[in-house]
Amino acid sequence: MDPEGLSLRVEREDRGAVVWVSGEIDIATAPKLDECLRKQGWPLTVEFSGVTFMDSSGVSVLATAAKRAARQGGELVLRGVRARERKVLEITRMDTVLKIEDA
Image 1 (cartoon, rainbow, N blue to C red):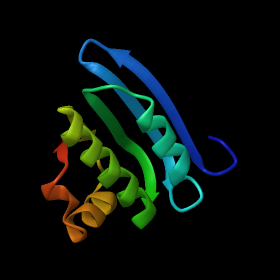
Image 2: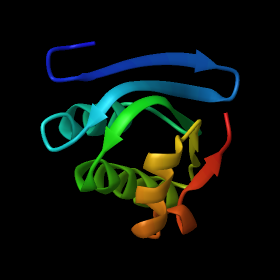
Image 3: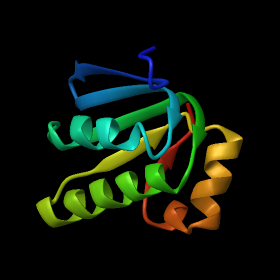
Image 4: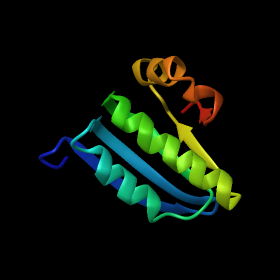
């Protein structure tokens, strides 16, 4: 975990990249996640099981990535989203835009 509270690890799988996210996604760490997601191709899976907090900054990064995927004919999948972060996605209606898979 880095000092800002966010850790990112990218793994390549047959079906594309998987970005493993651990820690807090907030105004201080969201740019780091955004930069990481922009470097990946499609399809892209974001493994959320290690996320302990997400505010609107994280939602914004995911919305931008989803728009980019739609424009480029790609697929963005969130996997392992915990109840608290799922609630944030539901409140913001991002759960209707993003593909969310259980772990």
